[in-house]
Length: 337
Image 1 (cartoon, one colour):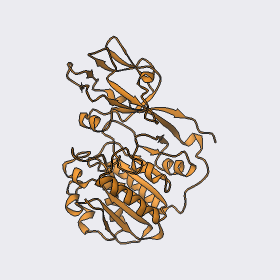
Image 2 (cartoon, one colour):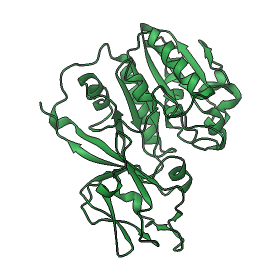
Image 3 (spheres, one colour):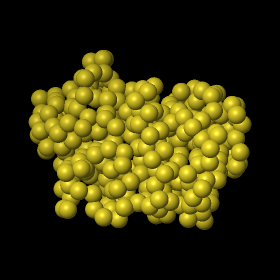
Image 4 (cartoon, helix red, strand yellow):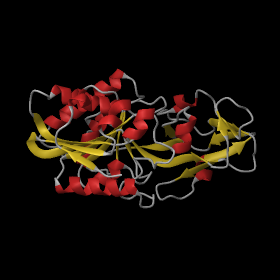
């Protein structure tokens, strides 16, 4: 596997489906395009092959500027085109393309080496900003994520909408790596296949291309809802789970994802459990420490939340849960004007 770098693109890129992109770019590809402002905007898409909104928004953006100059130079990273062919987050033999970036816990492999190479290439270009575009599999609103509580990063996120999440874990994500280089943000654009997500991402990218600078003053408190991710929740590897089979170690309600971005009280039931001797989920804090017992308890075969919290990224997709996690738990941060 090698990184491909190009400064022109085939016309087929403007109209091909995400599942066919591998025919144009069989390898991870950086596309460098010149604009009126030489300081580039960096955009990554398809780090997860089933999350197509970013790719469709980039197509719309490229089509807009086929007959006119880009307001600002633009570099696009097309990530896991092999997984996109099959509509999967990643292939079984692959690492997660949003866990391979500098700071990752994954041992050196071709993907981590390519990710490090990309960061250094873009560092040398003195980036304006970095945007990584994603989708959710569960029911979630559109929101932006940042890894530094810096005014420029908050301003960049707030341009996407008032809902912003600050997080430090998981490690090895694109936005955290680029946050050491320039203002960086992750966009979560709802489920794939929804046109409003594509339109929202396109409008945001187009606006960012036209910015001359990022504001450095604080975001007004009335303009932002800011949350901090305090725990990542995973299902233990030796535990089975289901949304329909009552003999699983964990039986989740098939409406579970409706809790996303809802502040839920202590005592809320997450699942029914068979074995009451141990908690079958693992909650990890930002330092990687086990804080399961701070958040969960078992009472009368019910897995319950012990404290008020707000979940995000709950999904009914069992493959994604195994490949990533069950959810994240958040708390509200109050900014001072």
